[in-house]
Amino acid sequence: MIMELSRSFYTNMKRNHRQQIKWQQAQALFEALKCRDADTAMHSLVTGYTSVQLLIHLRFQGAFLQHMRIDDVYLGGLLHDIGKLSMGDDILKSDKKLDQSQRDELEGHVAEGVGILRKLGMEKDIVDLCLYHHERADGSGYPAGRMEVPAIGRLAAVADVYAAMKVPRAYQDMERSDADIMGYFYSNHEQYDLTIIDALAEVVKQLAQNGGKSGNIGEVHDEKGARR
Ligand SMILES: [Fe+2]
Image 1 (cartoon, rainbow, N blue to C red):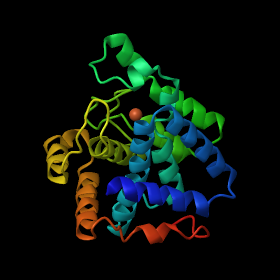
Image 2 (spheres, protein in one colour; image 1 turned 60 degrees about the vertical axis):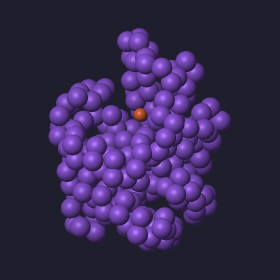
Image 3 (cartoon, rainbow, N blue to C red; image 1 turned 120 degrees about the horizontal axis):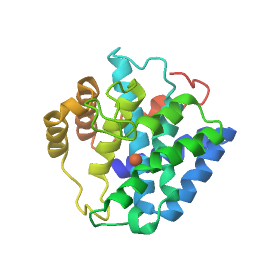
Image 4 (tube, rainbow, N blue to C red; image 1 turned 90 degrees about the horizontal axis):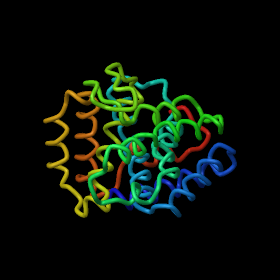
């Protein structure tokens, strides 16, 4: 369900923004990622879609993130793992436990991704979503292990982990239930932002109630109102 929604969201967003150079660049990068590893591409689609849904819910509640542009948050989610293009298949597609040097290379995907996005002149929120998506509020994340994670990073962390649990991968062949996923987040809330976890619970509930048809999608289809 979330995968079909995420695919159609991408189709609509790229159609609505097809005239913009930034979107043409993003689409080229994403298509390259899709060729390289379909699982990572699917994960990225779900991360982008979930990031936008979280942003919309948080704004609706007046929580924060009011200044962020929906299209930048979406592109950040879509491209947050673009640095994985640089990784060898033995790491990218591995279903085995990684040794330390492989782990170091894996963690390097953040710096690689940030470098690519900066070279293309992507907006700060897009770059920051990539830069901070593996940081954690208790300092246990990477690459910096910082405890002061900007809002865009706290949003990215929740969206990325949710997507990782929803999209089957080589090392995880089953989609986890929503109850299981929310249980994970509330049990490990010190790593995340509780307000964003609550927003995810609302997104998940709304998706279940609507049978997979998110009422928020139409809100971002109007290209003219970029800052919504
Ligand atoms: Fe990542």
